[in-house]
Image 1 (tube, rainbow, N blue to C red):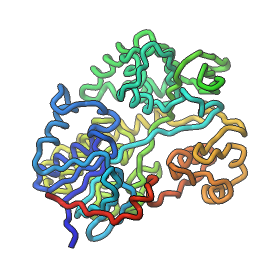
Image 2 (tube, rainbow, N blue to C red):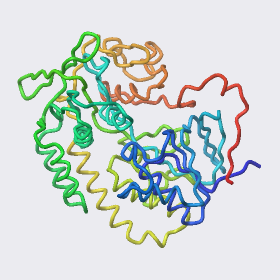
Image 3 (cartoon, helix red, strand yellow):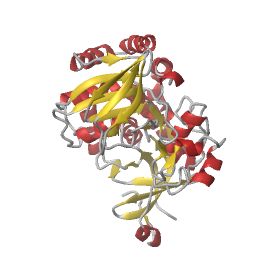
Image 4 (cartoon, rainbow, N blue to C red):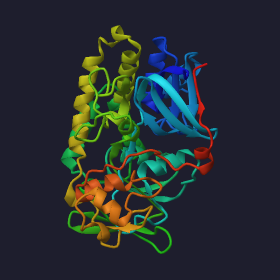
Length: 425
């Protein structure tokens, strides 16, 4: 018999941290896994336990709870659902099998990238990627930055970069002004959001915000030198050092797919009111269930932790709070829905699959993901379609079906060695 944890939480962002703490408060022995070196996720990257605010409080409570074991730098590469769910993770220690009666997926979201001429130039970076690099020590002081794409993340990225000393030249949003305004009104109605919005606006004072704006191309010899945007009927070219671009967030559902969890029409993990998935003993919380922001992620993590540990009495107020978050999420989806006339238009020579150098012109004759993959190697590189799969869904309407183990490249030494088994203390 392999030693079994009471619960494994995959992902140490806000949802995962809250789920782990709540489940441990219910008496479960919890293993909290995360691929990053430290807990916090993208939104709380760099936060420290005990610092002032919600992030510091939650990180402190998780770190000090005797029922929680945190394993950072460990990425799930395979998963199998069963009577005892099995996750296989890779870390500096090699491959490890972990068994658990319950699994809570809090794997968050990834950025959606859409190709345009010049998007592979050095200096063109995902919006969240540049945010992460600046938090990790990249010096952006004095650098000219254009932030473009879609979604409220653009504003947070722009404000964070400006705080680090960058010169943010513009925020270019593909959504129209009515949609952006509707989102602002909905956000202001949530507790505490009006204050956050005012602080964000203060941090971006003087930065042009262009709604109804499309990225046309990035230009440069060996690195980014300028970006061309389309505003209405005219084009504007801005000389810049960085273009931080992202077209919204997508639920990160690869581990869920390996476990057999059903997805909804928007590609998020389908859950019931208890955050339970279609697979017995597996729960999901946070952005993996749909993009809704940090408050929604914390609430869903709390519900999942309570449900997994049987603390149903703590959930009396959860339905009311969840309905508020669902309304906010609905407004978010409508406000920043991608509009074909405001998306980048790649040329035939534009690379779509960066791993295998497959270009837009090579893919236009295919009708589905599988045919294109077999004939062009699109999606067969190191990322296994994690980037180009969702891109082809947006460009061509294909359904990405390429999820399989291992989810990340593994060294041959790990594959040849006997995996260890990690059990609770």
